[in-house]
Image 1 (cartoon, rainbow over the protein chains, first blue to last red):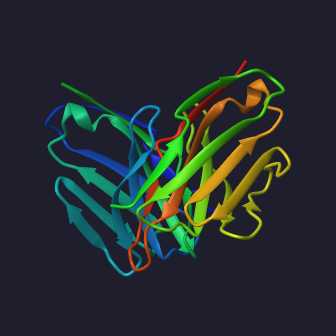
Image 2 (cartoon, rainbow over the protein chains, first blue to last red; image 1 turned 60 degrees about the vertical axis):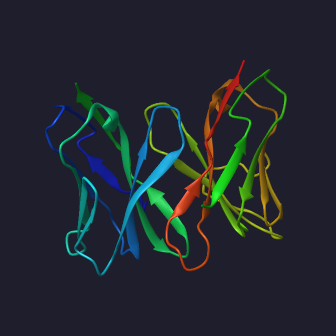
Length: 110
Length: 116
């Protein structure tokens, strides 16, 4: 299966702390994307990193990609209670089709 | 920006009945639509890929006769759950690639199906 895996499965931190989530995948990819999902809602696209990129920033988000290890990390700095959600990585191997990881459930305690 | 409108947002139906879920692309043409389902506390799982004007491609283990997908126009894709059973209760989400030249995808808001 191409499905990625995130760890940890669940993460609970205090507001203001940084949150780091990791994603591993199995096959070569064109790009990797991170999404967030609030409970019962559709996914929201956060950031995309291409296979030839190693790091990307967007606001409080920082994503790294290590294609040699087939892994990526998402760092959320200065977390807020509103960041509480599930975060998924999705790998795009070819032609607009992609596979989600299992997700990390993040809880930010006010 | 590109938006996919998904309806209904929730539906309760009786066992044995069929339910149709619609996804419409607004302001852009969606030649491809992905359909996902999500069981509680699990990741989204790709069910099928629909392409306008051709038959949908189903992932392994997904019953094509049970989950009928139609993509008759560039702005509308539908998923019909036929003869629904309680085990079909799930969260269904559609997704379309953004316009040519842009990376990423836009998602519908999801449909919560409960079969009683």
